[in-house]
Structures are given as C-alpha cells and as structure tokens.
Length: 241
Image 1 (cartoon, helix red, strand yellow):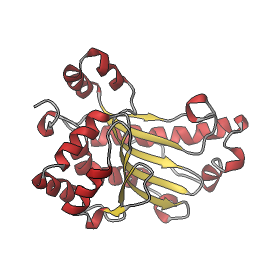
Image 2 (spheres, helix red, strand yellow):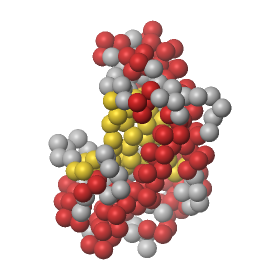
Image 3 (tube, helix red, strand yellow):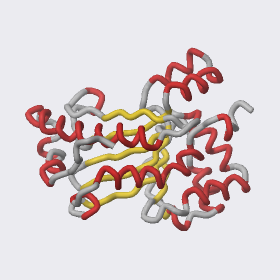
Image 4 (cartoon, helix red, strand yellow):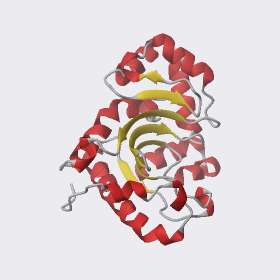
C-alpha cells in the first residue's frame, strides 16, 4: 500500500461535469485525480498479483485528446495481465497478431473509474481482446463450465453483468446457467465489451471515509475469481488446446 492516504473529494467528481469535459484549463486538476487513481492501481497490482496472474496497472488520459474524443467524461485506472503472461499468449497468437497484446487495456481488466456521479468498480473484457472473449464464450458453451463461471460471479452482491451497451443487465448474485447461456448468444468477441460492474454514489461513505485504498483493493479482490475465469491462461485454455 502507498504511504499517501488516497481520498476522493467532491471537487474531484466536479472535474467531469459536461461543461468542463473539453476544457484544457482543467488538465492540472484532472492530473491530480489521475495521480490518485494511479496510486490505487499500483497498490492493487502489487497486492493482488499471484502467479500465474501477475498484474500491471495503468491510468487513463487526463486531458482532451483524439483518443478520448477530445472530451474527458471519466478517468480510470485498470489492472491487466503482466508481461510474462502476455509473452505466453503471444507465442500462441504469433508475432503479427500478438502485437495487439502490447496495449495495456486490450485485455480483461480490473477497473476503477471516476465520473461526475461517483465511482465504478468493474471487471471488463475489452471488445478487441477477442482471445479472452472467445475463450470465455467457448467456456460458456459447456454447461458444466457455465456452473463454474456462475459460482465465481454469485458472491458479487451489488454487481451486474451486461454485454456491451445492451439494455439488459443481470444481477451477478442470482446469475445461473440459463442466464450465462443467454449472455453467450448475445456476446460477440471482437465486437462487444463484456462488463461486470458496481456503481458507488459520490456521497457514499465507502468513498469519503478513511481507508479508501484498502477498500478499493478489497473490491478488486472480490472480482478476482471471475477475472480468472474471464482471462485466458493455460489452465482454462479453450482456444489452442
């Protein structure tokens, strides 16, 4: 854990009001938010990494840029597979396709995101991380493995799962075999994101009371069993076996 206590203030959320999302004068103040996110992310990667799931953390852009549509509506820190895991997967994908692994966010990710309304904790498969998405979809094609995935999701009280921007969401705590079979039908790796997420209002004591960093890491820890189902690795390989 970092020596510096991380706290999010009301002013941090106000930096994502629609009226200032494109304003470069807010770059410095959004950089302060990015620094906080980065501290939490690095502490999380250190605390939660355990072979064979070694994590690295990154924080998103804090200034308007072509990459974010010249609008900073939110910022995030995210944890994704480390270098050794990427090299292992790259051996299977080949050098040309494997280059896509170099981008930190093109993976399954543990996410902490801030916007004007509050914070979001999430497990996400990036739409371009088709290796993770397709591996999971093949798992979901097996009834026994759907039960394994359901058992990883059911302890996540307060979290929902949805495909991309679809309206339908499902509570993770009540997810079952049939729900996962339906999700599988509507999920196309390479085109769709997959989201498991929980939103926390900016006024919630979870955010404003001391010890936030440890609570954030605990939330990611709750997501780890599902992350290990969602993220390709040799033990759950359905792509290359």
